[in-house]
Length: 153
Image (tube, rainbow, N blue to C red; front, side, top):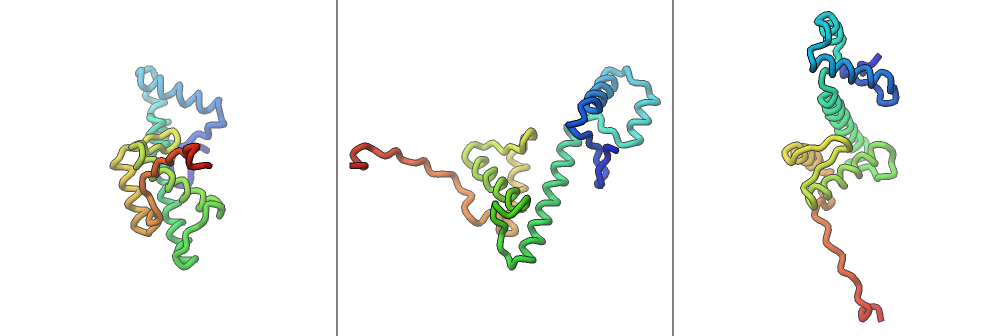
């Protein structure tokens, strides 16, 4: 049972035997050594021939679900955003604020093992901005000035 409720084929990374088996099937497929019957059977059950695409689709779907959860939270709490200490949603929002600042400072928008390009990052940030989630201060951090010994005395 590797298909989630949204129809994505996902093998839990903790199932090392099944992960290795799937990698082997993909390798056989790329090398044209997998029989057509096996290709048809695996395709029929939704097996992904490119594991990275599935990870991206699942990640995108998860992100959209969290965004919708954030909008519902705002409706229920009179427009108040969750604090980072308020469970999964608060942590998610804090992480995206951090991603925003990091992207502005370095030009890198990192999604764990997935790297997004600037257009992808901007689309997400625009979505968050549309509900006021980035109004706080998604600006480059100012470099701290080092204290001199003279200033301390």
